[in-house]
Structures are given as structure tokens and as C-alpha cells.
Image 1 (spheres, one colour):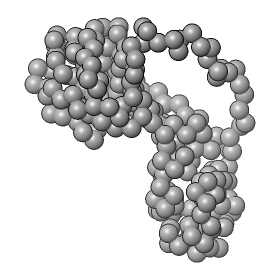
Image 2 (tube, one colour):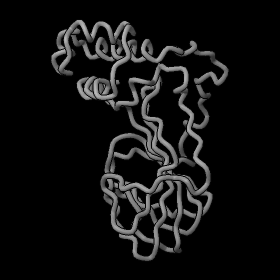
Image 3 (cartoon, rainbow, N blue to C red):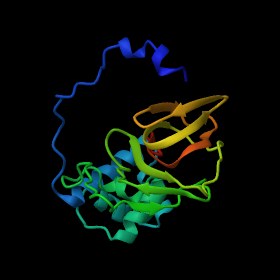
Image 4 (tube, rainbow, N blue to C red):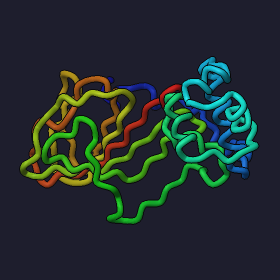
Length: 218
């Protein structure tokens, strides 16, 4: 990805309409789940019989679920999600109460071990909206690097990543280039290229990492 300062993309007008009004979501949970199951099944060109077999259900039971006629158990919803190859929460995405908003109070983020995390890298997940009609998953992290942090510029994963520096100074590698990141700096890049903090110049280091990638099956 070219340097943001030399990119002409900033001259292009944004195409998204921030005032667009979308349809209201379903207020009946059973109907919302059923519609989502049917939509995902058809999107993957699966017949009702095929999904029923994979999820260990009868065709009649699946039909009732898709029509919102019954309230499936959490275990059944999990089996359907597994069979459709999507996170369980995606089956709730059309429900009125699941409008894709999560408020995390200061200090209440969840410390997680993300796949590929190195020793000394503290990842605090600030929220997660893994199922929505946009077809995009967003994972915002607060990353803290201390003196014992491992310098490991070889993370690779799908999607796009945005870094925003809060504290400290680091030489951050993306592909074959190094970028000096200081408080207030941002770095936006394709995350499938090797990337990561190579030289920790001023500790402690804290930065936001916001990763976006397509939902599985979308």
C-alpha cells in the first residue's frame, strides 16, 4: 500500500450516504433467526434437506425454524451456525435488539490472546460486532507493548488493519518498508502482508489496532 501522503484516493468523494435509512429489523426473535437461517442457506445454495442433515435436524423441524414457528434451543442454533459456517451471533443479526452497538466502559475491555499473539503483547479487545448486514467483521484492540515485548514483524492475516498511535514510538514494518509511528500517527494497510513492531524506540507503547475482514460465508 502506498504512502497515504502520496495517495490520490483522498481526492475522491466518499460514496456512502450517512443519511440513508435502512429497513427496521424484526422484533420477533424467532422470526429473525428463521429469516437469517434461510437467507444464509440460500446464499450458500444449500437445500433445506442438506442443511437439516448437516445440523442433525429433521426437514420439518428446520422448516419450522425458518418460518419462525418455534423457538430453537441454543444448542440447535449453534449446530445451524456450525453447518452454515458462520459465528453463532450472526443468526441473531436481524433482531431488533442487535443493532450493532457495544459500549465498553474505560478499563472494562477484555484481555485476549489473539491468534499469533507474541509474548509480552497485551491485546485488550474493546468490542466486537461479528454479525451484521454489512458483511464485515470489526475487531478493535488496544495493544500495549512493554520492555519484555517480543519484536516480531511477521503477523499475517486477512483483511485491512488501521493503527493509531497513542503513546510511545515504534518502527513498524509492513512488507519491506519501515514506518516510524509516533503519538497521533496512523497506518492503514493490507494485513495479508507481513507486519508488526520491529523496533520499540520509546516505551511503553500503546496503540489502537482496528481490523476489518469479511464475514465467513458472506
